[in-house]
Length: 228
Image (tube, rainbow, N blue to C red; front, side):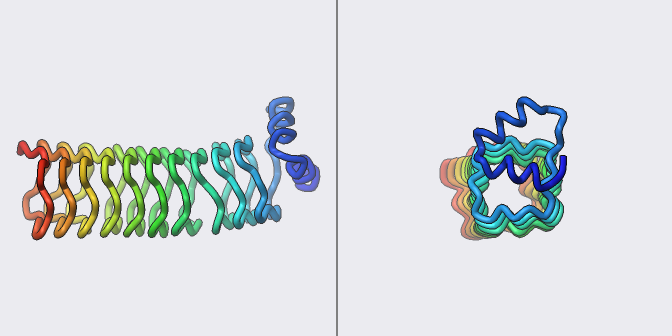
């Protein structure tokens, strides 16, 4: 369907848009290059839409469904992304620093080399996500599911990973300096040669973890579960 007609329907509001999507499930909306600055799209069904080069600056996208959406070149700066479904999305070219992605579904998303500094990813589902080379310093990943995520080369210094699921995670040689890993599940994780200096590991589950050569200078290991 042509761009202008799709945009006209969307501008009638999310309720009208979602009803139209239900009545026309075969349509893949074309919203490429659309100017959606500041738009309220909370809870919108955007599955399979083409948002290539769209301007979503400061838009409210919380709890919207982006499954299958084309986002290449889209501007998401300042957008509200809480609870949004971005599973399997390629987000390599999106600047998400400082963004609110609380409880977002980012399963299998490609966030490699992404700037996520100080982003709120608390409670997010990042299982099997590609975070290789991502800048995650001082980001909030508390309670996040990082099972089978690729964190190779990611900067995790100062990151809040309290209560996060890092079971069997490969963190060999990672920079976790001053990271908050309190109550995190690090069972059977590979932490060999990791920099854990001044990290908070209070109450963390380190059963079976590989800590060979890890720098634990100043780390807080109070009440940590350690059974190597």
